[in-house]
Length: 182
Image (cartoon, rainbow, N blue to C red; front, side, top):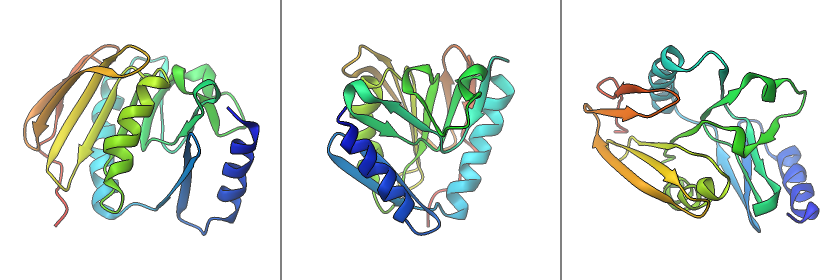
């Protein structure tokens, strides 16, 4: 990745008002506003279930930059699970390929970032599982089986149904407590 892109990303982060975050995908810097109460509530409901089923060596992390300089990507998922030793740093950037999963709650102001950009970027970055929760549509989608260019499996359910989260978590995610927007 061009070091100037990372320098621009850092400059953008320093200039952002409180409550905003920034990511980079190739030549594009994406800025996002802080999430709503429903977003936070849904994230916590999902996180509790992952926390109860995560292997001991994986720790939850919210808003950690997953970086892949070799493919020009820096993404900041709502939730990820990382090996404990990866988080033994004072930096907020970790190698993306160490993530066991990326969990995103679709932003109503920029759904294309989660549905298009991250579906494209996460398999390139070596992230094996991508869980996408869309409170606008009342759906949950799990992308899996990446080959380094794309995900080869997609499973969609509606709020209220269960979805199997594969290894290393290996549990049925209960979505009955998730709230839709509006």
